[in-house]
Amino acid sequence: MISRDYPYMYARVSAKRAKLLDESNYNQLIKMEPNEIARKLQEGSYKKDIDELGVKYDGVELVELALMRNVSRTMANLIDISPDSLDPVINAFLRRYDILSLKRLLRWKKGEEKGEVKDLLVPVAQYTVEDMEELSEKSFEEICKSIEFSDSNVKYQSFIEDTGDVRKVERDLDRAYYTEMTELADSIGMWFQKFIRKEIECENLKIILRLKKYGLEKEKIKDWLISEPETTCVRKTLQASDLKDAISEVEKCEDIQFRDYKNLEQVEQTLEVERLKSAFRTLHTEPLGITSVFGYIVAKMVEVKNLRMLIRAKETGIQNQETIKRNLVIA
Image 1: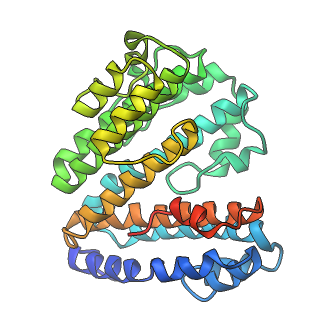
Image 2 (image 1 turned 30 degrees about the horizontal axis):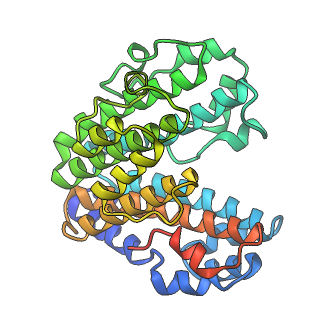
């Protein structure tokens, strides 16, 4: 039996990181059509998944399913090779994907999400298709009241205040999750603390911009934030008189120039891309230690996000390579 110690884990994680796509890989993929992208991915770490699924699927559907299967296998393997003491920490970080699955299920119960129950699952964390199907048989309120994670130090039920409003439940789940992550970050190190703080700031900025668009007052917007507006950027954006001024504040404090400030979806995407690029830059300063494991998880999930965005752009007929590349997060 292989000893699951830290040096072994670091070596395996380093080997996995070396297989991640780089800028030259993306430059090739951008020029390809969906079936060509599938064949190219088949040459690397996605080979097993594409080989198994390629018998039944092709094109965009093949790539989408292969990505999900691959990331599920990758995260399960990461837990397998990690020391027992690290398993709860990795599981806590991956809980964000269980929460995303729950949000999709709750929207589905309210008729705001399409598709089959199995399609709502992000198969990265602890929830299985069977778990989702069992939950789907319950009412919206019953699902809300059943949400709890036995391996978490945070009691999620204590955060859920209103089991009738899907938006408020989503907000409360985010608050519980980021409370857990903030506590977790204190035990991991500076890089992870900065990563989580930046993620919270980014989420709060996106919330403020969305609600400024609808003309909500400052005090009402604060009710929807994940946490108190702790950073100067969040406070100044919250104080802005309207959406245009709020976007200007974000541009100044984040040192970003939005190409089209009237397109809020594009503004949010640019903000997210810049946040992840910043995280990658910080990551390269700490290539060893527990931080390297979380850095790899982030990098792997970003790769999957990049590939899904790329394949969907091709599916919808977007051919402008610069447009696609602007929306990729490349280390």
